[in-house]
Image (cartoon, rainbow, N blue to C red; front, side, top):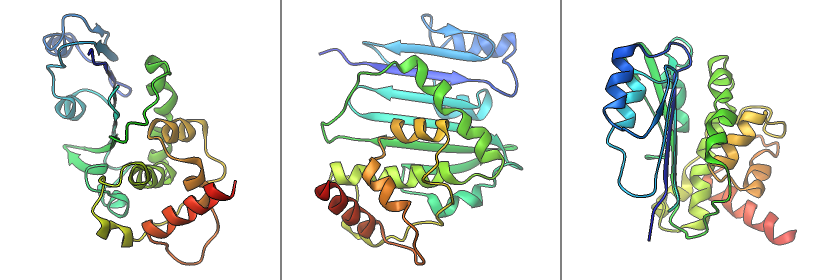
Length: 228
């Protein structure tokens, strides 16, 4: 059976020079490469570059999709625009992480959904352009993309009970940013990409005076879904 993988990188703040383009070209003879982008898809074989290293050195955004359920988004911002410490409350194992690379903060959002319930009827070439606006939103202090990524990570748990240790049921949600009922188009695209369930988002957006556990949010979302 053939497999499908899609890789896209964008350089937003600074184009790659000729030497840098030659270096990324060495990882693929078939990719479409410009000074500001790298795009390739695979139906066999595999990518020969290192996405993490490329984002740390060259690119400001990276999106990866595989037809077996893995999705990944990486964003690089100047560290003065997003302190990695801000991300600490929103970290979820390997699904939501952040680190410092030189003068940059690198965010890594991912899901590895092995539930078998994976749709693949969308245009991969439109995904990153629809999502990448969250980078600017994060740079001006909007924390909704971080919360959405946190929530989506636990949403995978609803579809795949082996995704987390059951002890994670008691993990408290991070600070809830305002505006979850009025997401921007980029945030909506991020939610869709990370397969964030609408009932889980609606549950999380309800006003509350206390921090909820991940388990409580999942249970409330399940009740909401059952009542529809």
